[in-house]
Length: 163
Image: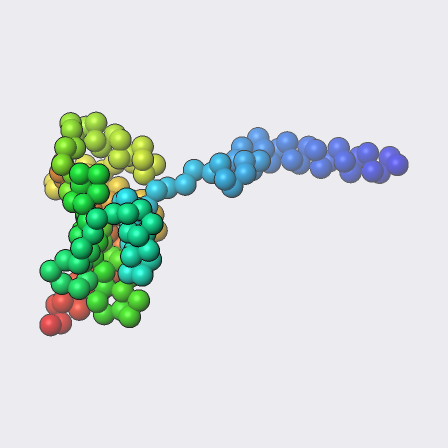
């Protein structure tokens, strides 16, 4: 009996120490901070079929772009272009570009984007940049948001350079 009481006491002390060191230990995964990594539901890495399904579910007005690898949509006043990889049979998306109609003040837009994507903005020559996921870069130039899978973009640049 005494051994059980001592063992229970040690377990309580260990859990208390763990919570003191890592407070998120007791938080359920559903409350964990999740980084947003899409624009209007479109995210690099989605297949073209998943993209078409999203367009149907959300009733977006979209049309095929000039080439078969681009989908152009008008969503809530923004012009969104979704580029997919023509060399891959699944045609995964590698870039989402949204041109905003009325973005408002740049500082307010940057703050809002930082909050939405739960990421810190980095000021550069061409505008603002955020790292929003594993290998995903979001940029904003005051008018347009661009979300890019950097690895896919580098691979496509290398293929273009060979042509």
